[in-house]
Structures are given as structure tokens and as C-alpha cells.
Amino acid sequence: MTEVLVVKNLYKKYGEHVALDGVSFSIEENGVVGLLGLNGAGKSTTMNIITGYLSQTSGDVFVGGHNTQSDAIEAKKLIGYLPEQLAFYNDMRIGEYLDFVCDIKGLTRDRKERKELIERTCGMVGIGGMKKRLIRNLSKGYRQRVGFAQALINDPRVLILDEPTVGLDPSQVLDIRKLISDMGRDRIVIISSHILSEVQTMADRIIVLNRGHLVADGSEDVLKEALGSNSHIAIRVQGDAAQVRAVLASTERIDSIIELPSREQGTCEFSLENRSGADIRADVFRALAAADLPLLFTYGREFSLEDAFLQIISESNKEVGA
Amino acid sequence: MRGIIRREFRAYFQSPLGYVFIAAFVFLTNYYYFTYNLYGNTTDFSSLFSMLFSVVLFLCPILTMRLMSEDKKNKTDQQLLTAPISLSAIVVGKYLAALSVYCIACCGVLIDAVITACCAGVEWSVILGNMAGLLLLGAALIAVCLFLSALTESQVIAAVSGFAASLFLLLIGSLADVVTAPWLKAAISYMSFNNRYQPFTCGIFDLAGVVFFLSLGVLFIIFSTLTLEKRRFS
Image 1 (tube, each protein chain N blue to C red):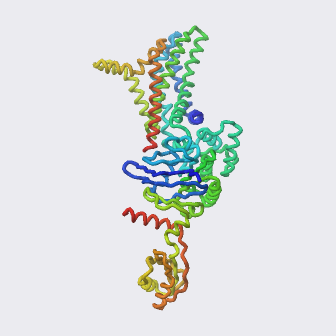
Image 2 (cartoon, rainbow over the protein chains, first blue to last red; image 1 turned 30 degrees about the horizontal axis):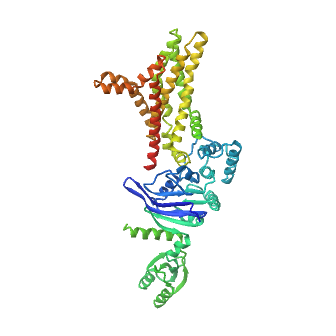
Image 3 (spheres, one colour; image 1 turned 120 degrees about the horizontal axis):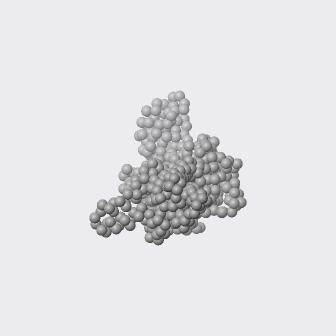
């Protein structure tokens, strides 16, 4: 399959600060790709370089086979970009603004075709019938929709969305998420977000950046599996929490003990983990029975994307000695 | 580029800036027209065009102060820089929009000439030569001020540096009188906007002046483009 987006050994320095250090990945199939990372991990820098807003210090980016440096205009024709805070010309009306975007994106000059294109795009993002509205009078949600419209108007092969739901109310967030999932059916959509549940809901593939390095790349299930999520359980025990903790601490194969809020009087709850992936339920049962502490409940704790993300970041930080 | 020209030209008239620039230019033109032509009872427009030299120098920074700096400050440059359009097209588009507004303002002089022609004979060739000089002067100065606007995100700084540059260009000619080194004297005289502009006001279509103003305009458009390019590497 042909690779639509190829990022090769991307390196970016801001003065002495290294923002990206040898980031490489490629995307072939349509779908939503989530770009995750803590603040300063290099997500926005990566997006800005792909879109041509910034230049890399070294490395290459190819969009549809076009190098974004040497063949920038052809590469940009295949991209739609919604920055985290898209700045608009506030003195323009929605229709005027989208007409301007058509001009700078070199889209059809035929008046009828252009009118239809603007109508169609406005309809897709739910701002049909609002073309005469001044942009400065729009709410955050509608401004975001106009942002989507300008990104989509050239029917891009690669759609890049930087924090697309920031500042939206819950109902708008749901609308935008649905819109993004729909868009991912016939194009590549790259989204960056701090909200992990959002990425979990929408993304088919997740790329994790940490301090300018790519530290994980795969589907959510692949990331969880790589981190041994099957060995993660939670228990409810009748008895004193300190006593239970002492018994669990003396059990050999338990690597992590985290106390959870108690949901029943006279009981305590713990989250337990064995990092090598071993099943620890029998060990826990025997240890508690020997100490005369009734085990009321055991359940497999679902390993969330948040857990996976934090563990990947933590392991990456250990590797670089942070 | 067409989209940039349309957007920037429209922006001049969606704010008071375009109207204020044209009104100030036309007011000063007509003030000098009244003083030199009507009050002086002459159809010779040379004095009027001489005075317009300093008017242009002080009004052009107002015309260009927001052109590049506003985009940088409001981050609307992100939209332009990620669009499939070259950096030079962005700069030239903005430049041509400012030049169009300047040309509209200059038409005020032609109206005065037409009014004069209705009452007495005027030397149209001299007036058109002068107009060419005025347009070339504006074209070069707009490019210089556009470059200064590209260096900052503050419109005020862009305007003040534009005024400083204009003042320097206005006074550079007089520096030649106090310099003793012949090569420096020659260089300063060559660079003087006034020296390049005055032949036009005397009815001389000075090709060296045309080349000087055009090349200066092109040079500063290139500088502005390089400034945008440099921003991508920052």
C-alpha cells in the first residue's frame, strides 16, 4: 500500500532546545491517528512541520509523495489544517472568509462551482445558512466549525487537527468527535489531544511522543498488551487497610499496591499489579486466607489508555535518565 | 495571490485606515494645489509634486503598518503559511493591495489637473511624468515600509520605524553636503530619494530614477519574503 504521509528522522531545534529528535513514522491507511504527549512533547511542532508552518532542522516529510520542503505547494494541496487556536480575519463574514480560503488554496474560480463548494462544506460542518454571519460574532463552537470548514474545503487527503475540542461545551465536543470519526472514513486524520478518553474514542492508531522522541506507535490494544495489562487486578477485603497492606506487601509477586477508595463499610480496596504479567489472584487469595482476612471481591482492573500512556512516558523518562 | 490582494484591499476599507489615508493625502494635495496653483495663479504643477514628496514619505508608513505585523500578532499568518501559496505571492499580494490604495489616493492630483485644464492649458506630458515619479516613489517606499512591518508584530513599532526610515530618506541627501570623501558623497547622492525624485518634478523622465525606485521596491519585497521564510525556521 502506498504511504500517504511519511515522516523521516525529523529533527527540530529551537535555539539550544531540541523539540524533536529523530521522529519517524508513516501512515498508509485512512483512519484517525492520535498524537499523544505531555506538554512540550513535540506534538504541535510535528504538526506544524507537516503543514509547512515551520521548517525542520533536518529530516524529511512527504505528503502523497511530495516533499514538504522542495515541493511544498503540491504537498500543501493535500493537507487540511486546523491549528489549536485558529486565528480568523474577524472583519470577514463566514462566506467571504471561505471564499478567501478557496482563493489561497487555489480552488475553482468558477462562481457557481465555488458557491456550491462553500455550501457543501458549510453543510458538512453544520454552519449551512450562516454564511452572512460576521466571524467576530460567532461562539467558540461555531468558530471551531468554521475552522473545520476551512480545513476541509479542499477535500484534503490528510487532515491535521490540533486539540480540536479545546474550549467546547460537552454537546459540541460530542458533535465534533462524531465529525472527526466520519472524516476518518475517507481520509487520514491526525489529531492531537490532551484528553486521552477522546483519543481512545476516535483513534485507530496512537503515536506517543515524549520529549521529542517517538516512544510508542500502535493501536490502543497493542499499546495495552505491550504493557502487560492482564496482570492488573483490584480486590475488596474485610478488615483493616494497614493490616491488609502489610500482608500484601509480604506477598512475593505483587509489584505495585495502590489503595483505592473504600465502597463498603469495614472493608478496604486495593489495586495490585505484577509487572511481568503473571496471574497473581491465587497468591493473593492464599496470603489473605492465611492472615484470616476475608477476600470479598476480586476483579480484573481495566487497563485504561491513561495507564498505558503514563507508563510509556514514565518508562521513556527512566530510559533518558530523567 | 488574487485572494490576498482582494482580502487586503477590502481590509483597508473595512477599517478607517484606507479612508483616513486617502482623505489625508487628498487634503494635503488640495492644500498645496490651492496654495501653489490656485493662489499662485499658475498651471505649473512642479511645486505641488515637490511638496508631495514629503507627504508621501510621511503617509506611506501609515498605509503599510498593519500589512504584515497584524498577521503576525493575530496569528492569521498561520493560515497563509500553511496554504498552497508561495511566500513571495503572499508578500506581493499584500504589496499590490497597498499600492492600489496609494494609486487611488494619487488620483486626487489628476482631478486637480483636470480642473485646471478646464480653465487653462496644462502640460499633460509633464503632469504624467510627475505622476509616474510619484507612483515610483510610493512603490519603493511601500516596499521599504512593508519590510519594516514584517519585522515586528506591533503596528505602532512598524509605523514609528517607517517614519524613522522616511525621515532618513528625506534627509540623506543633505548628508552629502557635509561628507568630504568623494566616493561616500557620490554614494549618498545616488541613494538620495530626493535627488532621484526631483528630475521628475522638473519634467524630466529620468530612467535612472525609474530603475532606482523599481529595483529598491523589488529588493525590499525580497527582504520581506526572506523575513517570512526566516520565521519558519525560528
